[in-house]
Image 1 (tube, rainbow, N blue to C red):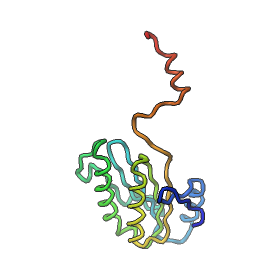
Image 2 (cartoon, helix red, strand yellow):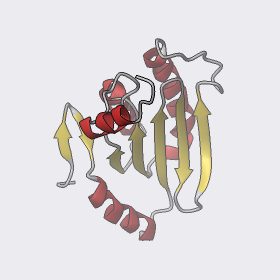
Image 3 (cartoon, rainbow, N blue to C red):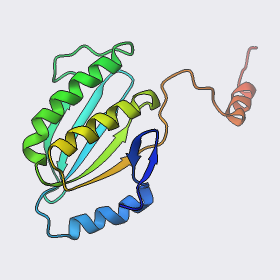
Image 4 (cartoon, rainbow, N blue to C red):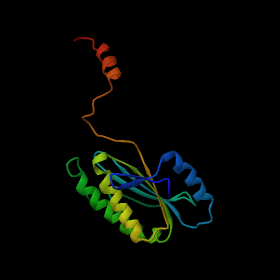
Amino acid sequence: MNNINKTNNSLYYDSHKLQFQKYNLVKSNQSHIYKLVVNITSNNIFCTLINLKDQKTSLQLSAGKCNIICSKKLLKYATKIVLESFLKQSEVFLLSSEVIVKFSGPVRLRRFVLNSIFYNLRLFKVSKIFFDIKQNKCFNGCRPAKKKRKKNKGLRLFK
């Protein structure tokens, strides 16, 4: 656990070190190793629980399956509802097991989502938790790099 870095009150595991740990987890004799994938897009939330021993999806949930209308404005509230219901349903699978949490989503929701996952997994008495967080993901309003802007400037035909 000495490779875990702490930033913004949430734990994450370096991705290049995670690959090595993931390989060791699959080779170990533990019977319950799960990968919890949380992917937040601009209009929806996808939560998936995968059993790494069998490579089969154990549980899958999204805003549509929870009958929640999700929009860009309501994304934070929908995320809370979907995540809570997903973690309640996954409690049966995650009791005393090892879990790899893979998160991909906007920066503003990162701390909230990871703290709630970490809190619930500690309640389930999960033996080991590994975090894999993708780089910053922002929706709209991002200015492209200067080189891309200059390239697009040259493609204008009529202005």
